[in-house]
Every structure is written in C-alpha cells, then in structure tokens.
Image (tube, rainbow over all chains, first blue to last red; front, side):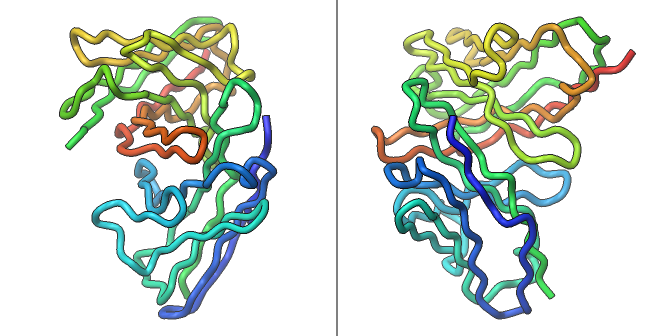
Length: 109
Length: 122
C-alpha cells in the first residue's frame, strides 16, 4: 500500500494563514480527505473531494491538490483550530485500502 | 442525520479476541460502507477494513488479513469488528465510520463513532 507523508508539527500565529501538506503517489489520482482531531475526541471531517466542506465547518478551511501533494489551508487560524490533522486517501492497489498520513499537530500561537 | 454508536470499553488477555459493535441510526444502513479505523495511544489513525452491508462484502488492510473479521447485521443496523490473537500492540481506540465513496475519485469518512478503547493486558 502507498504511504502519505505529513509534517509532524506546524505552528501559526493567531489570525494568520497556515498550510498543512500531505504527499503521496496515490494523490496523483485520488483526492485526499482531511480530518481534525482534538484530544480525547473522534476525528471530524473538515475537507473532502476537490475542495468541499461538510456542513458546520467554517469557510476558513479549504483544500487544494497539485501533483502528488494535497494541502489543507486555514485562513485566519483561530485558537480552536489547534488540533491534530490527518489526511486520508486510498492506495492504488486493487484492494483499495484506506491510508492515513501520520498526522500534523497544529499549534496556534 | 446518521449517527454511529459503539459498544463500551473492553479489557482482554493476550491471545484472546475482541468484538466491537457499531450501531447506526438515520439513513439507510444497507447502502452505507462502514470502515474501521484504530488509533494506538499517542499514535495516528490506521485503517483496518470496510464492509458494504448491502453486498455483505468486506475487505481488509493487508496488515490485518487473517486476524480481523468485519460483519454487518442489516436487521439491527449494526456493524461488527472482531480482532483475534490479541497482543499488547493492539491496545487502541477503535472507531467505526461511514465511508462515502465517489467512484475512483474520492471518498471520505463521516460521521465517526465515539470510539471504543480496547486494552490488551495480562
């Protein structure tokens, strides 16, 4: 199965813009989905497909993709955005296994 | 609005098995795909496998082949994940999630169950 690579940690000043990236071969042909996870809670979907937000997710969250890299951008980061973020895709094998990135811990300063 | 409610925490001995349930409400259960994802303490998310209840077909991550069995009971809208030959490294929170699939373009997991802590200890 393919791998997805994320930076372990990223920080952003309150109100500034931050981009969290996810790299992997499967992303050349399959859009990533992104999940926010706060301590002790289940993950929450924040972005899926080309750039879709589920109901209730603020519009400061957006997604993009280029080549083998998917990105989650938070424009005007808020204190409540401090969390772990995971990307997900499917691998390119015939089994269509799900695969997650290792996660990025976002700190809002 | 689909909701997934999982069974409670479990403590198991090494070598034994555990079966976690995931009961769905809202929507049409048979038309879902349900995936299972686990998270070891302080670690990331790991996809284990999925089932399509309407077809009764499951597929599993290579890592768990032969050790995990995912089933679904359409009459009770409940999916199950059974993991056998437990070892300490299987200590984790196990989540179920509905997986929406859009061809070979994208998929996503939403919503998620609340998670079930499985502790493997002698």
